[in-house]
Length: 254
Ligand SMILES: O=C[C@H](O)COP(=O)(O)O
Image (cartoon, rainbow, N blue to C red):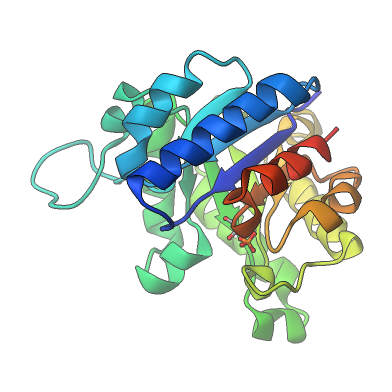
């Protein structure tokens, strides 16, 4: 059985104090109210990682994630954060290739392949993001577009490494727009991605990979999205910034 995961991506929101408050609220609520085996991941800004890591390492089903990492090991890369640094503050996950990083920081599929390999080499689980812009969806080219992202960034991995990757499908037109993909659109894409992985590796390996949905997922729609057979949880932006909303989304993942 593959893992169910609900990851909150705080993006660049709040102060240091806001983040600590949010993390401790989420952790307490998860401890008190969640009895499923869903893995909760808090993907915080870099400045929160060390402090939030001290809280999450005491709690079995809440994990720490970063929102990015460097493709380099160490050295003169001003402003970058290495995978070893992330491990040293107890991060277990790292988001790689979010559409905002692709769009505003020009990250390419080839660069993301290096980041994925770097994360895996340090024992971090990459949450690899993929997804199409609106014009690609309107031209009905979403399947070739997204499968190409997966091919170019992931398909040089060995079977052993590929098994450790988590994928997040995030249609760009649904991110922060309030316009979510329908559960049918999400299921279709997740099924296509799983088949694409099966064609390159094997049906057995594809069946083990958790594929999360992201894009305006919230308490109102999470249950329907998570009920799809190939949707294994979510990568949650806006709704992860309010502890009660985030908890509702976590509870919807059964
Ligand atoms: O990483 C999260 C996604 O970009 C989704 O963001 P959103 O839930 O605010 O639409």
